[in-house]
Length: 498
Image 1: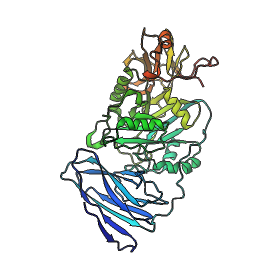
Image 2 (image 1 turned 180 degrees about the vertical axis):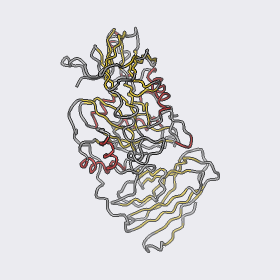
Image 3 (image 1 turned 135 degrees about the vertical axis):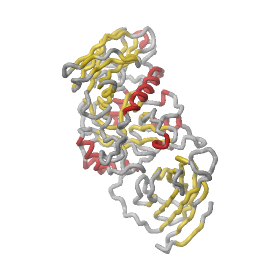
Image 4 (image 1 turned 90 degrees about the vertical axis):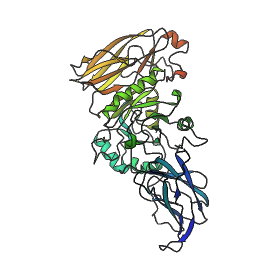
């Protein structure tokens, strides 16, 4: 690799560095290119090229302290970082003197030997105007304090993702047009989108912008729900691991949810299927429905069922994976709200939504907000998502389901389907707890052989097992709410009454 210091014809004060070189063939999926930044620099611009129609390289940047300054992934445009402004996917801030690192990800290497072109321009005068609309993220007060079902989408990409284009205003307009209450911007491996939340939230006070990130690796994608701090995605590098990354999300109060776990599409979606080996107790939820990939819903539900069969209480979530704010969609793309996830929360706030997911209080409408709704309840008041009793009667109140069928699913095995012939329609099941361990129950609305609405599970364990700490214990992944003799009977959902 050569480093040639040249004089730019554009500005005499600019310094251009050629850092082009060969992609190391070392078995790792990332490598670093060091950049020596002198004192007095106000802006850095990086032009990069993978020099191949067959290879794909991803790009990011760390500053002289090793701090995250952006991840553009496959952005084709130059990356620009200044003190008061930065290009999409990157963070503005002080430009300290010292060794910076350009991060390069080997997304796809088909042509070898592989090489790259990197040209860095360092300026003592910034070319980007200050971005006065960028402010550090700050959690907002609850938009509503009503306990009810809230509709949202946990998987939406903004312009801050290298493969997406919509600004927050366009996302908000489309989401509100579908009567959603919240969206989570799950941009790839960056938190730059959070800088724009404050202004967008003031402009759209009736739609909650939920913080988060799509943790995007070459072995699987996951949502950090509620995340506000960058988490390193280079899990194969020395000193890093998927377990450490999951812990970093949960240490900041975020939830770790696996996205499209069975989406094996090869080069059409690099790293989309989940291949990491991660202990169950570090996973909080599973995306059982993603966009228009209906053929993957069955395999994703099977994946969810398999993990739940091991005793982990995992909430069901859905996400559109929208990259275009609902416009210019290709045949395989899906608009915001398809799927829609319903969350029974005590408020329209970040923490209330996180708490509701922890308690398994979710319903996924796989096609969109107009799908039937299911409210699953128990005659014995649950604690969180768990009923501790020898037996109970489960009831599912279904609205908007005329013409479809419904069924209970026990421990992953569906019962006979029942025609929905009234609105609302109530489906009931007498359930007995096992002598040890837990049974889990959910309800699904079916359109022929296709699921259109799926609840999270309600878990049933004997009172004796619960007293002994089995089944619903923290070690099995269950969540619990504080006991209170003042709780009313659970009539609206199988969770902790508000």
